[in-house]
Image (cartoon, rainbow, N blue to C red; front, top):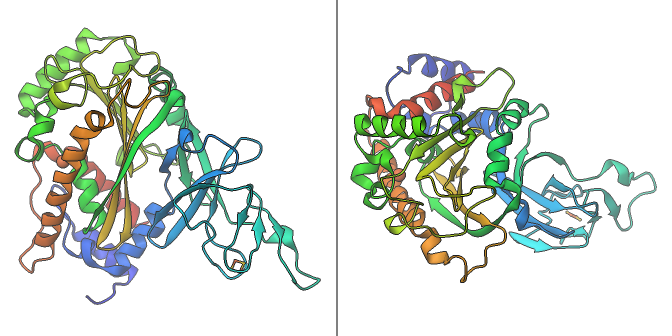
Length: 401
Ligand code: FES
Ligand SMILES: [Fe+2]
């Protein structure tokens, strides 16, 4: 496909009709993909991981998308910091493993040595005028929401003030800080990242595609039935901060603020958690005193989604590998005092969303195949795809900046 100028991209954005899926070019054009990297992935906050993944000084994990790699590390002072995983000598990757623990960050190529704060502390045989203080690793913005680590590569990141303020009670209630990572799985999907994100944003496909999910989540029921169940659930819990509704997502975000959303939805009657048969699968989270038969949807920034049951939390993150490949990473977090094999069984904990994400992977791959066809044309969205529509509005607006 021929390369597009930014004027041409703007024309395509103008031509895109509201209420329809995107034109094929948005999934296929390399210039559009580069614009997405610049305007979305390099500008917004991305969920990196949980503090429990790096409990001790020197513990680190790497975090990758497109051609970028970041190191998220616990420093000597106990802070969480992030640096670009790019040596300031001649650019080699420094940390080659996905996780590890190091006293220093030493480049494997010519052994330039950085401390955990990213400052260069040793470089052999350099000219006399070489200034080590000007050759530290590129810094990446880090923000903590309870124990959730977010990173942003922008020089001017969107503010998290509104969402931090609005989520204070939710964060304490579910004990974001007092969780630990029980399992993490990466699903590599040969499809454009937007198809994966769009799929996550609508439950139009839940009933036909996810029988396991539909047995537990009322959201998979016909819209009228779900609406009634949700209204009853909210009324019965009126005034409870767990049932707060925050709708500042995508095009509804205030100027300069990162987008976010929080909402609690009912499970089917009798279900306690997201598991086979809706059974409880782990000790209750944070300050939660009992199961209420619900699950909270939380979105922070455009690419990180959380699903909070009373006894565990799922983190979903979508990142591109290239224009036609993406990774959906799913993390399962439990109460930090829970013991694997005793208080929870990993296979039971992960069953529902592993089977559901594998099904989603197939759906998304098939979607990409159809989108690749000469006969693909933008299709009309259903009323159940309103959240996806909001994403598309925001996406087109962001791309046109
Ligand atoms: S590229 Fe890292 S020390 Fe040379
Ligand atoms: Fe799905």
